[in-house]
Picture: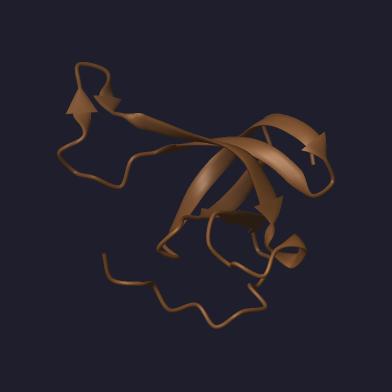
Length: 84
């Protein structure tokens, strides 16, 4: 995993977001940036971005929310988004 790599970030309610790696803290922990899913979250530059730090690889957590996996890598968990 390197800065600039594309990953899939799964948020705390288990929605997936295409994301880019902005920092690598080890093979199981990264920082990411992604476009906000909120259609009203826009400004003069377009869709606002969101950042998450110290995001664990999905295999390194039992939470399966707020985690990442490589693009093309299947999630090993049943992926049902949680209603807000």
